[in-house]
Length: 468
Image (cartoon, rainbow, N blue to C red; front, top):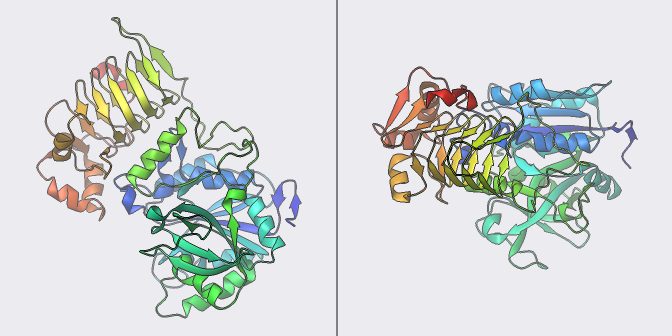
């Protein structure tokens, strides 16, 4: 059983892999790591993995960072503190202890930090991803891992076969022991007892510490290894006969969750997936329950006033349908249907927003029509602007439109009613040099403008009300 004292799991350390680039989520990830991307109006993606560990009683946590980590590190250093003997959340960048290179794969991120495992001499190491949205009592998986005598336990969940090619596919015997692991196959194998679905790895593992060290060092000696848990380490351990078991995430009984409710895990690796997951937050009966007081998701505590709804001149009234408004935002005589508004935003009178996600600090002008838009922080949509009304026009005007037709506005974009959009100079530089966005930026050369004065960190929110 898990040894606990004052809620502290004594013989397990946690490593959260938070170095992902998240190219498919560009341009949101052109200037920040994927785990640092805002979510749900007031959170960051990393907050979910951290909250799961802290709520589950784990107090020795390393966050392994790499790509565009400054925003992530700033968020962690300002908002995530544990107080107590031998309690910590520490950032561990790529240490380059094995050569002058960044993390070459998920397993390499842990391999380069094996000194931390040796220093603390835990019995078990929990290695979890930091770039998914999920609610998870990890102590239940830990108990399963120990009760089965597993060397490695892999958290798993069924997903539709059409989506399963993005994940590692598990094949298990009747005892739950994994007998096959196929990383991102073109034709995923269906579950025998659930046609149309495949059993996939969630990218969350618990290892016996000694085995983890031996497996990673052995993998280092393989010249063709990509040093990835799903491609190399887990399949090799299965072939070698180690006890690798599947933990059924569907059996995770989250405190405070109604009996029979589905467990929640989403891969938000694409713009369409990210927007869909944000939409679930503001549903009438949200699949992602952020109101569960027994399982709080912790994040930054900001000094903003309450959200405010203002009736301005005229007969219009504010209409809110299935929408969520965060602190510090002001809504005037506008219509919002299926909208998530981040903190410190201003939506002016007569504007209409539908199926839209606004991150913090955005300003929507009067009489604007905004449909199916994802606006990064500090964007300004001018009075009378239209986005999402004419998809053909959108694709000629905006560089970033998802497969599902969602217009994505990079951080601090200005959208006038007519004419070219404007990027701040710092964001335009990042977009031109990000491999995920540079081809589109080149294609759109001459169709956008650059503001050499304003910086992308400047809010376009309520304080700019007097500037039109």
